[in-house]
Length: 304
Image (cartoon, helix red, strand yellow):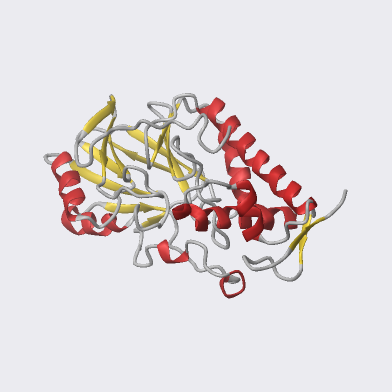
């Protein structure tokens, strides 16, 4: 899978429109398109009568009003948050104030202890005001309206990332862990490539028949797509090792070679992705740095 091949583009859901996407699931896309959010954040309304919303989204007034209109006449029980990036969680506290719903989801963001050494990755993107009523952990279950949500911890994109499985439809709400339109950004120190690989393998052991990502359309063949994602990341890893072998010792030099022709607006994300791979390669003993693993360090391949 190359940078664009096999990704599931062509998503055309209009922002603000309520769409029924399955018997138990409705979707509204927030009006926050961008380089990292695609057409906007997908908020999902689950159930009938007693309902939950997965990833309420940004603190955008029109999006919040659309969610309130979508659940009018129903009881909003839970606001489920996959992680604390500001395109996912801020609307939760506003909806809690307006409806009395319970915020249940990931743990609040905690700055990594090595932040001063590695430098910020997507640190500024976190919603530091997020305060859940219930902090969920792997394997926890929530019941409402005759439905069951199971929590699947998937660190990698962020340390606190969760997915939510809807047992009655064998579907998984994957947040930013798995998206059909692009690979997720892994940005140390909060993001971890090693944990991301483990979390992808974890999903390969499940039997979900459909993924609902927080950006873009559904992933309809989850197992096939997970294999493609893993293959793509291992190809990127191999390319980085090749550049180290060729003498490219800095992240800037590696990005210039393996992301040649890449959108300049995404160069920072590319550098963070290479950094995440290098951090993982150093931990696995396949590469070394000339000091702490940072964006500015020089890296060298360790011969087998």
